[in-house]
Image 1 (cartoon, rainbow, N blue to C red):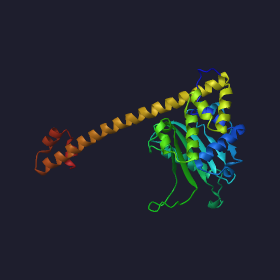
Image 2: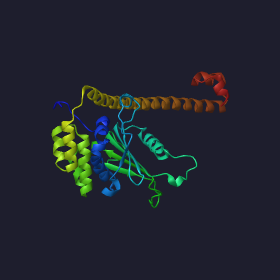
Image 3: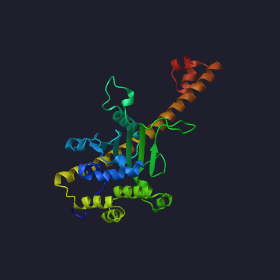
Image 4: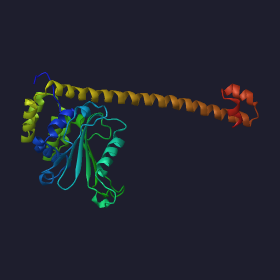
Length: 293
């Protein structure tokens, strides 16, 4: 691998290639222990689902390269990397969570057979819900905050928040420190920084060695680059659409406000007995619109 070729686990193709493989399950287990704050015994012997990486899936603009797995207690977990935050992200992650929740459920089965599902979203940039590195959401009673159920759990990991040095001041436990190192390891495309972070953990050391010796053939390199470009294009399109929507909303708002003012003025003139044709001419409304007031 050329030193000038910068690899990053923010690339969902590379993330799934490494952490979604049987030989690297120990790395995935270690990552999940940090995110979910679960003991090792709960995550050991996890079952990887949807392990195959197909070219059509990678090059499809709607394709999501996620890592999906099942724990030995039946809990299903889906890990997804998103390049940038958008207004549609929350409803979309709920949609995919709901599909995961009912997947395999058959008519006639008791609802108690439905199992816990956890969505873990790594956001590269633009996360807007809060300034935290790690946010976990569930269903709770609004006043007492008592959990209704543990069947729904959604996590957001803000990769852009791990870059600053000030974040370490908020770290209070070894597990939080470990998670921070994991997220920095995923976020960086700097080989030297990745090597430094690898010294903090035997698991990261092992994963870093696999990245260093990884030799993408020309086809794999093309797929890697296509995912980088695809994520960038989607982020750009989303931002353009969002800005266009804001401007259109402003224009519609101004137009609607102007029309409402005309209607109110016309109604007032009509109450005073002004000629309808004169009102229409003065306000720019049609005769029919004035007559309906």
